[in-house]
Image 1 (tube, one colour):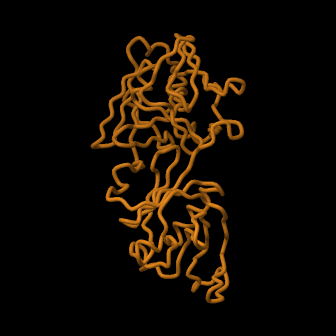
Image 2 (spheres, helix red, strand yellow):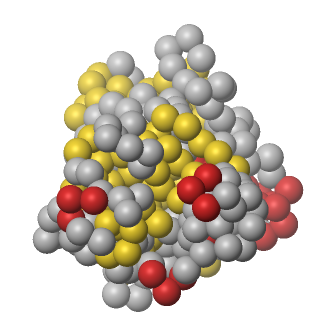
Image 3 (tube, rainbow, N blue to C red):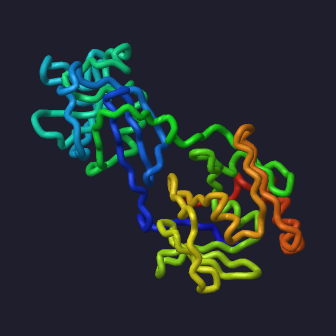
Length: 293
């Protein structure tokens, strides 16, 4: 069996930040999917924090606060442990930590965007110089667009899979990890470095697709997908509609209880090798396998 990985940055994730001053929230996006929302503090007046499209231009660890000569790393430093400088004109604007946690969620700054210190530590590691940052003032909140990482119980032919079968949902759609799914079905999955594609071999077909495309090739015949495969943290995911397009499996997603049932169709059951099925639901198998991203 082959394991899927992406060499280098063949399909680098696009990341961006959207800041909504109206409700003092910062949204972090991966490939246009909202994955994190943080409470923030913005300018005491609306005009203090500029609105528009900018980008991260510098990153600093333990930035000093020159205005009051407070060294970096001090618990009294109002910039906190990290700084993400922005390209906004008219001053030194940035996204940073704070020394006053009670200010988060309020209009309190001279124009910068404050986060809780634990939040800026996480965000700092996710972005690079050049990451787009949009600052807006709008009534619509982020919550309805946020990825739901509440644990999902996944069952394959009525047998519960271990938590390592990482599954999440977005707007009530389940997203299923492709390579673990291929393992359950005893399909071979490979990365084609020449074509920059994922190739899947099944008993009935050769499947080829690019993670950023809605066009899927089944035995060289193009099929249009409703949802393209998604790369999240280096892992390729597919939705229910995509899965049912090229896998002989029925998908029953119960959003209210967060249970996902994957059932092979009758003609497929005999083709699944029993030893593979047993190992696929053995937690030790998931721990020992070299699950490369």
